[in-house]
Image 1 (cartoon, rainbow, N blue to C red):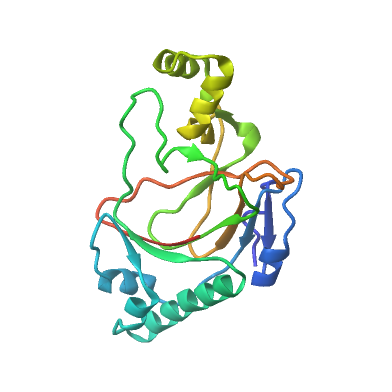
Image 2 (image 1 turned 45 degrees about the horizontal axis):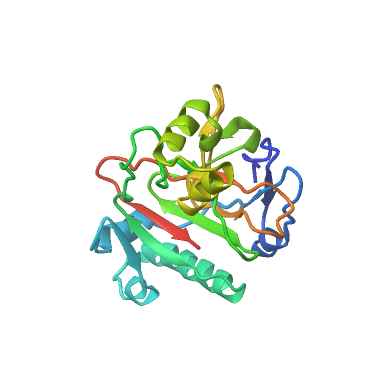
Length: 232
């Protein structure tokens, strides 16, 4: 298989689920990709699922209840297998049918929704897993190609005007409101599109982490097209 992500020094490309789980995040490596060429008709699954909100969590029972063609069956088997593998590994996967995510429009100078480049944070050792089966795909960004929004002078100044306090109190304010989790791409930076069907494991910010957390974002959805996303 052509390792289309192997040129990106932050990404470890693997060919099995066990290798995905065994990849050590250290130094520059903060993302692992089980690169796959999936068989099956995921578009058929999307067309037969019912969107109940802009983001709808799809249960495995609802997925299994769908009447599908042979290729639809193949696609469903992939999703069920991914859920079984991740669940057995201690993760809690969910399947999302997405029209759009909620936008953060509180401030015009900084955004903290999932369309903004961000990292995930956890008090315990964990990882973020995701796989786009259908629709627009997520992106990651090398850490040296990004800058924390709270360190961009004009943004930081506006945040300080919003919350005038001691430096320690201000830093706590940034953390409590998740401003410090968000990044902007440096000029000339090229994000990595995660592609369809590949199962990704991304490093999270937690106390025992031996690398920088992986910076990622959700894509803007394509007009008239839903996304089918596994995430945990």
